Amino acid sequence: MIRLTSLLRMRAASTGNAQRASQLRHLHLSDQPLMLLALKQTGPAARPLAVMLGTDPYRPRLLLAPPSGSTAPMLASLADAVTAYIDACQRHSEHLPATSSKPARRRYTDAPQILVPNPQTVQHLKDLGDALRFRSADGQNPDSRAVQRLGHWLTYLTDRADLAGSAALTPMTSFLGMHWVSGQSPLEDEDLATLLAWIDPPRHAASGRDAALEAEDPATHRPAGPATDAAFDNDQLAPLFDAYARARRQARDQEQTRTLQELDRLLATYVQPTWDLMWHAYALLHALPEAKGTARRWDHERTAFTDECIYLAQDGRPRPARDHAIAAAVRLARMEQAAAAFAAERAADDPFARAELRTTGEAFGGPVTTIDPEHTLRGPTGRAQWRPRLTVSTPDPVPMEPGQLLACHTHRNARYKICEVTPADGDTLVELEITAGMGTVARPNHAVLPEAGAFLVFTIAPDHYRMPEFPSRDQTPWTHGGPPADHPDDSDEDEGEEEQ
Image (tube, rainbow, N blue to C red; front, side, top):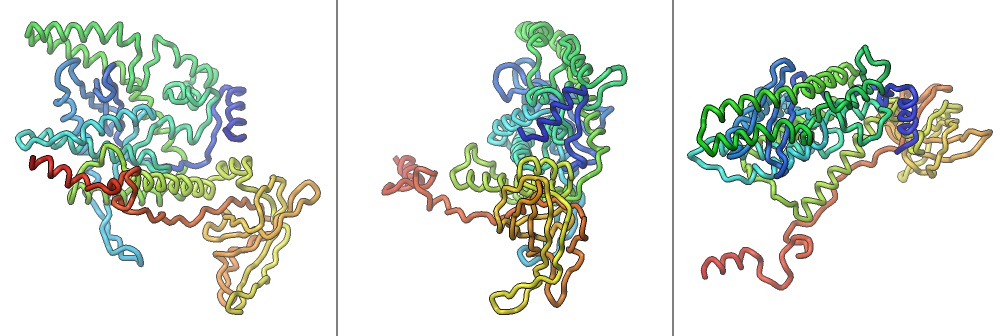
């Protein structure tokens, strides 16, 4: 845990109220997100019990799976609801002109955004997607094709949830924790009710701490899923499950229907408080001003969604159950690139993020003491290059070495190289040379030059990302998923076995 987060957590514990950790909202919020709350039965990890979902806070839809027997009808209803929401995002598209690297193409003007209570629900949906996308589609049963498609989209959305800055599938506790720090432990922050109590306590509570203690009361607390409370399972669910099983064994249809109605009312009452908390959290986050980089990241989200729709229409083969070595390496590289880009954009947008980096030595700030706007260098061809310099006096520790490239929040396209670091009178003088974004000698960009006395914060500039070149699968050794050395490939062996 970094110093600033530790300080904010201690201050929250001292004052009894959560502390702001971000000045801006760094993830996109749709005007009509799909809220989704899931409950699962004890036993198989992906067997659903109930799902509450919808885009209207006042009209949630509850889907219930029977305590025993097939879950196919419930999954078919879930598939219809989720895919209808996804299909609605494909109604309108825009034309993107050709660039130097991409041809002209069309992109959807919207993309799906599903909000869930916590990371455990994301994992539950991932397990459900893994179980559904490999189901065979029966031409005689259109529901089977819809359920298979639901598995495809759940896999896509849960994969996007692993990318920093993505807003396709977002746990609400993580979303809130990005912008507020409570006085409880990070593990306790995964409970939506207590985290919201710290952030926005009700009027009758003296503080967020008191509201959180009240929210933890076993008599009123409702877990946000997907696992239910053990006491709830034993005292209320188990009797209804037993009654349903007896009625089914004895073929009492009316009693089965009555039991399912009671179960529906029970689960609706159980989930409704969390449903209300989700929309409360949505309202708090929507009220935050949006960071500049959020729109650009949402553009990338729409591009990824459009590409996935095209893939599903043209090919549609499900993602394998386990990535081979090359696919895993590509996925890891993309996750690392997304994390670095998201951190850099947060630092450029948000002074809170820059303050956080200053506590770790990844940034420093201070006033500009001197400026040399006429400094030039001779390039390799002998032509003069305009390289203005400036000196910043900072009280922050500067563990960076000369030659390190930096970025500044005032001019995002500019780059600054450390020329010299000199300790002086308790502060440190850092001489910087502007190496990008300043124009040329013939056409200088004087707007990049700060005024003397201006307070600037410099962060480590993100490296220009380029996807590494990975070998094809057939060029990797057998230990990493490629063909075995000095052996016929698997397809030949399979053909021989079939002939025999």
